Length: 211
Image (cartoon, rainbow, N blue to C red; front, side, top):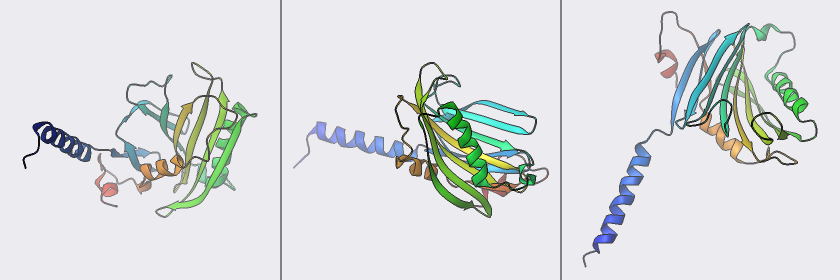
């Protein structure tokens, strides 16, 4: 029995949509020389960089959802570098994460929450992962909550962070226990540090071919 034309058209449309979704890049690999190493991770394709700066041994780059701005955003992925920080006595990825969490807490002492996901390694480099957040923050256009997945990495000479932050309605407690933070960690993976090869330019094949 021949299928009705409307059914055939609907099936074809669904097939085309599924094929387009499968072919569309869901993320792209970002590899950036930051001080002594290349920092590599997967960036979701709906983000675009909006700010970058290097000053006094500190590096920062911010990316927000396409169509949003550095001032008005709902999600932001930030990469930072701290030059020469491995020389600091007693430094560790966990202590570095703690200092960043302390900055969050000072902004919202009454609504701060944190959830350590633990120590880990990225390749041969030590790291630490946590979720930190403020239930109420007054910065920005309106009062809001701000929660972030925080990844700290100890490189050969420098420290790095990758943070995926989200703003939402203000609350008594930020959603640090939500399972989506683990999903976002997977979305950023693989996270790697690679050596800078003299004379090598983007797309840095020595780091691309490492995986």
